[in-house]
Image (cartoon, rainbow, N blue to C red; front, top):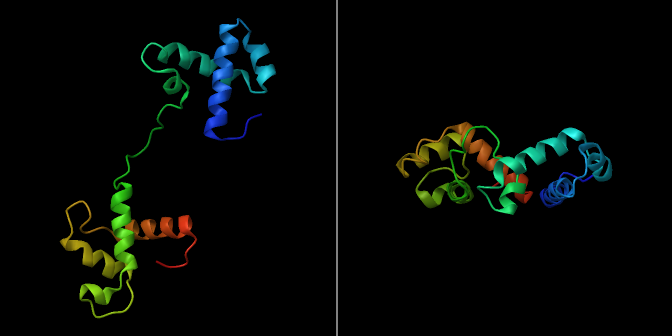
Length: 138
């Protein structure tokens, strides 16, 4: 069975479609590719629904998942992280380290999409930064 990696899943999906084009049954395809019948059925159905409107690669991609649209893009998150990496003294503040409160307050004069960020949003941005780069503090 394929591991959960995008490229490998796209190959599996392509094999499912090609097996269908060769006339293989759902059962035979699922046995040959070591996946369940529901997966074969779903991807053959996706192919039929999408093949007229999209390129081959687009047809093999997962459909977008439901959920909230991200409120901040990568550039905005980088601005937040960059600010948290600066020393507060460089911005005229009388303290040596940022807290979520002071960082949030300092952004009040920023463009509207970044001003007044909640402490929770700042914590999530900093936490993501710590996880990605392996730092213990910004």
